[in-house]
Length: 233
Image 1 (cartoon, rainbow, N blue to C red):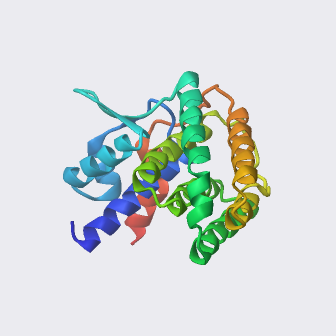
Image 2 (image 1 turned 90 degrees about the horizontal axis):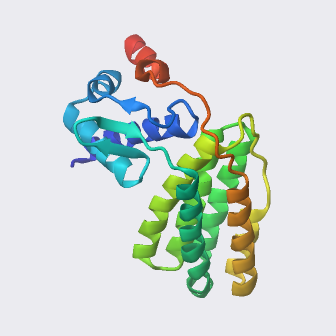
Image 3 (image 1 turned 60 degrees about the vertical axis):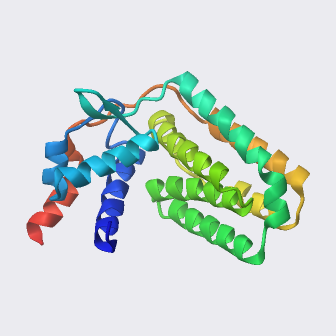
């Protein structure tokens, strides 16, 4: 793909993923290719490429002869996702402490700063996205690309679960978990960092409320702002 096509793909992916994070698309919502083509004014080829990427991140399910729908992780799915994350994220701590460089510390602190800004300004979708980015970037510090890719997929699934199962009206608040982890990794304190990560993931899982919230399955309603922007452009 050329650079323009990649930019378009990324923007559409972000629009759909954000709609899931913000609970504007709910589990089981059908993603009709024809409507998405109309909403984003692109070809079916592009939409199918986006849906495939979303399916690889387990955000969308591609069902034979039925099309794409927003994934619906069950309670057991969520428990297994967090069990897998614990194995990976606690397992890479030693290497993260070993390889962490000044640039890594700065990159992690930058993500935490942007995450906290998103929380303080009420940008829930951005805060969830940046929280996931933090964990994936930390895996990158361990210099293990296969684990980083696996974790990227698990984080995407966790973000979906959070969007689906977090208590309605729950307000995100700034805490020190992520910055404490950064400080421990930077100082090479592996034992402390493992304890921090264990408690952090346990807290995130404990906040899940496994009742799917109500929402909207109408694609044109969900993406009304996109349609309005195109109409006035």
